[in-house]
Image (cartoon, rainbow over all chains, first blue to last red; front, side, top):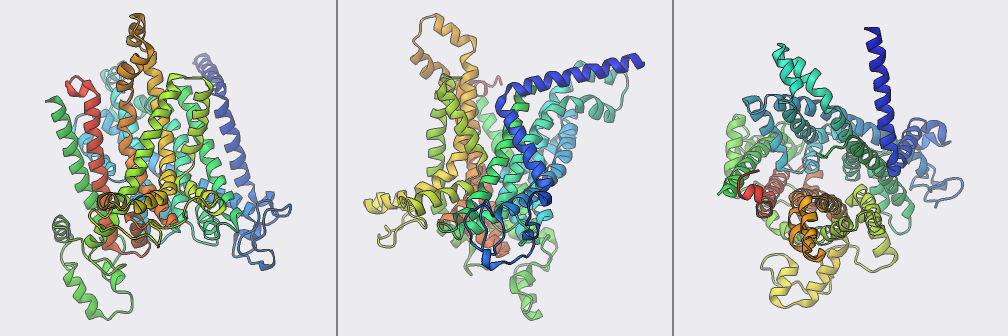
Length: 294
Length: 339
């Protein structure tokens, strides 16, 4: 038994190495991974990276307001004299948290729905679950999220919830496809013959086969979730001031456009770099796992 | 026949989806915010005013009955009154929809007109410098949301270079053509006001391109991989072996099957355009339906809000039906019922 286990472990290590080799062949994806690692580290250690941590809260220093980029403030200051770079770093925390919340809420729901509907293909469970997912095909998710956040009090949690309401359907549809093609495979059939019950088959036999698809989808979706969160923030439906939110920083900056250009341009670039990084990673994973559905 | 069955099924499913959407939006606008009447009249209105409105809007009845009244009204074109403009919502929609219509049409034209050719060229010359250039452009454009394109374009092309107007749909000094469809580009062509036509087009360039670029990149990527995959198939090698010229293979045999994936996601592009228009129209002051939508949402104007979401749903469903028709036309598997 122990020999088997160590063999299995070595096999797993080897397949990880092989996977990393395939992933690292795509230089752009490695670049994306580096960018994202740096952004995450910068967000986590933001208070130690910048001397202006108090600029995140309700801070006023009108003598330093509206300063263009300089050595002291590399990306300039805003209307209240707050350092833009500091606010971007702290804004990243919020964006990443938002993305984590959206994915954390929608991925488990979507995966379970997709697995169940896929395994119980063409039964009433499949029909009901997939018709419910179809409802969300009738309207763009962002507009639904806008409508929901507008009736609730605008804050980070509500924005994340509103985005998740339509978001899980993408996971459900994706997993449904994989699961319903898995159910006629031999390993599922043999588990059925052995008398395993459906929870075992769904979660221990089919789910492991969906993992690569799910993780690729997640890495692509983090970028989209950050983007959607920034869109809500841009309209003032995300985190409320003075909390730094990348979307609302772009919105504030665009009101003072030609003169104080750095107020809008740098937060905008910050969003683009993050989304780009996650897209590059997602593409690398897709090539690595050879997934065609995404 | 098979294609009719396929289309009928798709239309039936989308109708079901719309019914579900109406339930969902009814729930959002009536149940979530607590007391919609209080939100309508404000906290300081006397109780009898609230009572009156409650009775008028059938809010004193059970939820199911309320839903029935709401759907019946919506089917008759009565979507209630907007608290934001203080007019019937249907009149507001009639006024604001055409502006978004022409913007969205122009956007989709750019998306398909640039995206597909870019993808075809990149796929045909895969792994050449053109392909790499297109790939870099696509990576950048897909990752940049429309509202950021809009902000950057506004800064660069309007404020710094002063090539394009920053705001609105038509210059103040140009006479608006008599309204027939409400779309200035169409109306001005009907009445021969070419100055108005060019001016509106001029105003449309920046918003339309900021809306179109992400979708264009997406479409180019999908077209590229589809062309690239099909190029490696046996039937192409077979045709080459027969000595059919490359140009003919490209235009006659390769293009049509390769267009199926990009055309099938055009529906999603319509959705993306509509939702991004909510931000882009806001930035460029385009007096359209989406700007109206965002205004009523920020004002918590529930009647108008549910109408806006419902109309977006209907537009989206109709767009998807068009896409399905196009796909049926392109895909013989569906047409012959073997897929």
